[in-house]
Image (cartoon, rainbow, N blue to C red; front, side, top):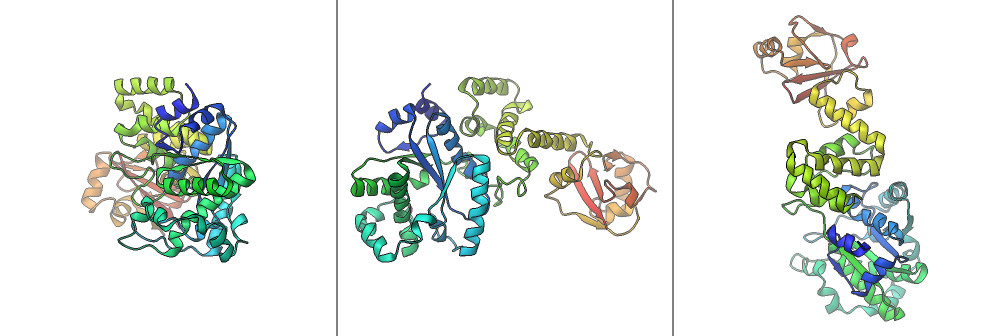
Length: 408
């Protein structure tokens, strides 16, 4: 299977600017770029689904450039419905440092910053050298501009495509970068750069866009109740990422395996076959989690995530390290224990049970676990020496409901 055929099979090509690109992709040797604006100091899982293309093309003999938009990040790519909030220069600089370090660590490729070639361009030179090559009607026809015409678009946002076109022109001229790769929402910006290169240099450049990775309802991959799943393990632990991936909807899981892993066609088809025979084992979900977490954080982090998940399911948490406790219960609001307390009072005072009668019933029928052990003693006193690491109280009611307390 050629590179192009593999990308098509995986559903990673939505549009290319020229059929000539197919042979160029298959032959290797092209310099290409993919970029992101520094809206945060870490990429999130949605970025991963796009940036993974850089590894695929690198394995096929192409040279990737990862662009961090220190200049474009000050303006903001037009959103479909509203203007992006302006980020301070100080925050942009901080985010650039974080993204640059992360991109080098995860993807290992050369990182460039468009602030380096934009900062010394004055407004008159910008309009003469770039603005004169863009017809207003051409710009108004772009989808990301048309979608904003009813609610309005500022001149700053309107100019964003010129800045991105200037990036492509600069990288073509100085890095022999012939291809820009991005998500499908960037098609208008990419073709603007191709046109600028053609008009100023009389050369052909190429563009390729991927469909956005979404769920069955069209929601972008990685959007979970408004919270981003960060690639930075300090922001989103491997366990949190594991839980997100292992609970993805069944109907989309094979599509995600194609787009988000390096597993071969044969391997994915074998996983699909076994998954269809035994869907309750969630083999495809586990394979996806393994491939992504090992790629991002390493095998040790993946194994730790599996251990936490399996221990929580079984209730065997008494051997958790402090870090594993913090990762496992990150989403829970801990209650505070300031003095030794009877277990019944502890359960009622912290909302585990609604009354002392209910607490006694739950304890009596073995439904309450304390730090991984079922309890039956109604007179048990919770003290610091009974806490995990002399600090944590972890209560489990039934099979799934956990509560965490901190003895202070």
